[in-house]
Length: 120
Image (tube, rainbow, N blue to C red):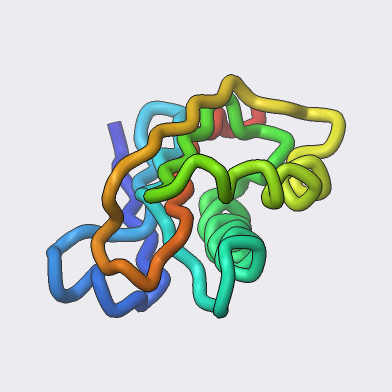
């Protein structure tokens, strides 16, 4: 099995020692991704754009995502993200979980992790 590692060049990749995504066995595993911006919706959109780039480099898209996990330090901030999530996932909604937890730095309001199946 060939393994492909995809880096986005994010600051935490080098600090912690991980890559944005790994392609293995027909699957794309995208690491938890935070975004930039002043509030949860800006960060959500930014994180999804970073994830989109990784999926594209892997040969996949949001239509191929089968699982997504949202992590937020304050679950009340999840609902404002729903329209953005519908925009990105559209007619192909994945299985989803939302976890309330601490993130790597207090400035981050959402972290998103996805798994996609490579199209044949």
